[in-house]
Amino acid sequence: MGSCETNQAILNGVKVIPSWLETFRAAQGIRKISIGGEIHDRLRYGEESIDGWKASVKSCQSCAAAQGNYHVPDCDGEECPLCFTHLHTCTCKAKKFIENQSS
Ligand SMILES: [Zn+2]
Ligand SMILES: [Zn+2]
Image (tube, rainbow, N blue to C red):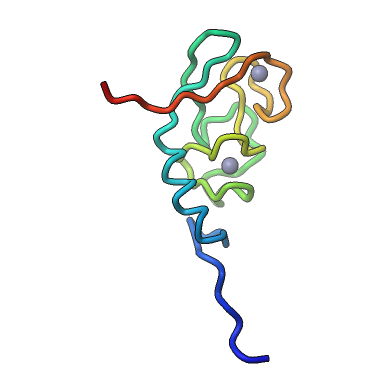
């Protein structure tokens, strides 16, 4: 019926809502995570120890990250740099994403 509104954008081959593009872009500047008071580098998509995501052939199906991109915070595809299980569900305490601060 009539023309559908195309309320979609494509990011790395994954359909996303248009506002996700900005969310995703901002996520690329968040490179560190504080876990229990210690600062760690975030793992990028494709750097996981569990090769369940096939980063080399397809983008993250949750946040549309391509290989080498950072996941959007709280994406369930991101791995914890401390315990190497899913960051979203791991039991490490006091996790906090840290935005890049250019001093
Ligand atoms: Zn992701
Ligand atoms: Zn953890």
